[in-house]
Image (cartoon, rainbow, N blue to C red; front, side, top):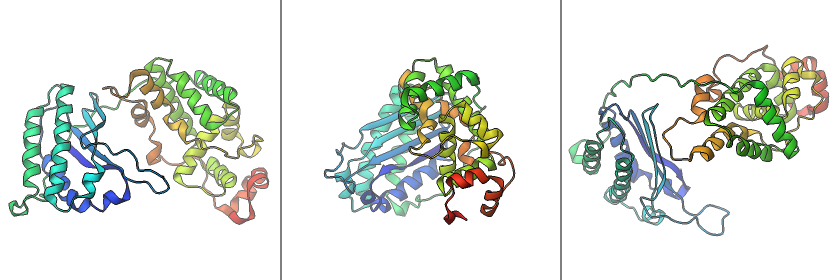
Amino acid sequence: MVLSTGWCTVTRDVTRKDDYFSPMLGHLRSWFHSKTYGEGVLSFSIGFNCVGRVPGMAEPILDFETGYLLHKKYTKFRRALEIEIKLNHAAIMQVTSPQAAEQILWVAFQRVCQEISTLKIPQFDGSAFQRDLFAQLNLATQPEAGLLHVPCEAQPVPPLPKPTAVAMPVANFWQLVTQAGEATTYQSLAQCEWLAQALATHTTKQIIGFELQLRKRLQKLYHYDTLAMAKLVEGYVSDDSFLYFCCHLILQGPLVYDQVLRQPDAVTQDLTVHETGEFLLSVADQAFNRKVGPENDQLEPWEYGQALYDYDSCAGPMLGQDWQVTDLPLRFPKLTARYASAGIF
């Protein structure tokens, strides 16, 4: 079983205590990598959240007790379990030994095991996992036992089939985007919220279909010409900023989108980015969770989308012809005249 444990959301002061926790968590990850507790769970992610005072805030964030549950989800398709637990910030700040850290983790893992029992996961021996978890947690604080950072070969995890679904018809996709734009005067943040609310009234298949069609639209924009547009309009470009710029183009509607693909230098629409298009990437997931609730055992839209086109890994080669910055005035004279400052050349 692939076990991942560690911090997911913390403030900087918490990271200073990591030396007391990381040996134990590292040992647990290593030890459980060679174990199996049934086919019901192939991967288990346990995340810890511990937040104190945030710079710039007048008051610290409310400090929850260790063991407060933030999130749990079991996905049958991936046979994956996710649990996120709060650790008490004041208690973490008082930790000065591995034994003190163990006491905090002991309380947190007790809550983890309680939550596992409520899920009633088929083909998973939760009792055996709980027994081994606490036995190894106890041993991990005893260096003389020689168990810290024990290298173990992981058992091979059988590959799972990729999730499949049907993309929303492109006409329906653009109809939603256009309606959202007209209702919000194409203000990106409001447009994305409108889309999430509207999609939540659709079926889960249609919500997933929207995500798949979005991925298809993004894949077509993964082109050197679009990259050049981003460079000229924004003055700089990175992997993230390019992705968000592509979202921005989609939010402008089908006419702008099609012209970007056919004849980018002829686009007359003002492409200046006033609000990020980033939130378009999470619209389907937000709608899905509003529809079925955040605690469910179903794959989320992004997981279907990732199987179709993984924009985080830049799947596949970029389309079109590569360029140097000095090429842009010749290849895109109109866009250069409208947007480019002399500083980018």
